[in-house]
Length: 98
Image 1: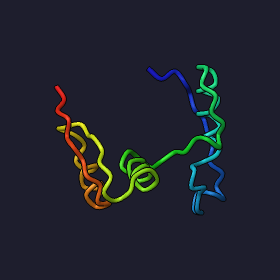
Image 2: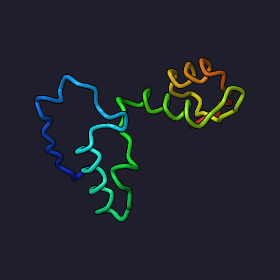
Image 3: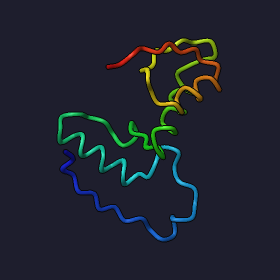
């Protein structure tokens, strides 16, 4: 259960411009404070927000894997992940889940 209430106002002059690649700073600051309250110390500069799971997986694959690497994935799993791994020539081994 999430017990945080986030009220972040986006200034009108920034709604139609490019954002930081790390995500909206006030949101990252709020997340940082939320984590800090739970004993996890992460500054806003250590937090990256994404536009969903697919975007997050794409960033992880591009930054931490190289063509020819092998990873383990849950099977059955998230089909878009398999397509991304194939696109970047990453081998994957399915581990059955129950």
